[in-house]
Length: 218
Ligand code: URA
Ligand code: SF4
Image 1 (tube, rainbow, N blue to C red):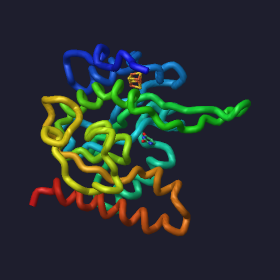
Image 2: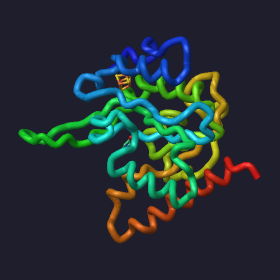
Image 3: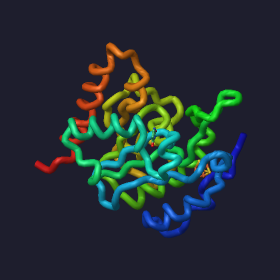
Image 4: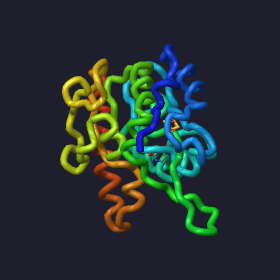
């Protein structure tokens, strides 16, 4: 199904405060209907690293902040281990509303993966955030974010850690030339087999450390 998309809700002025405020009333796809609120990106203009997750989860939807739940806690630990100060980065999601299902009669909300049409509908926000933040590198956490920027055929398993450029490799139209790379989503480490968790975490930290080395001025 086609959605009108976020485009017509994005204000002319791409400063972060205007964007975040306008995004609160976005009706670009149907996901605003069941979620509590829009979860916009957090961080500041001029952040050298912009992280892009998939969509807010249950706790993010309640708090209105990205990556504050279990995946966010793991992300925080990995950033720490890689020597990256989260305060100096910008953290957002490909999709700004929490998509979930409920098992019949249950209260618990279960994460439901956004469709590519929803990712595309929400993308004007992500591109406007790119304009506002102007990061040196965009780090996609998982396939949804990577496919939002690099196209639906992109596979993290094949291209993990590789550098791409939005002007030559992107799937976002003209006007963007940011460098992008993809790594795994922190949730994939939490969901993975317990006996492989430490190894998966270390590999994630290694990817983040390589990102830090890219942006550190020597
Ligand atoms: N997973 C995401 O992709 N983003 C969040 O903000 C939280 C969990
Ligand atoms: Fe708008 Fe994105 Fe929310 Fe859809 S998910 S209503 S496009 S902010």
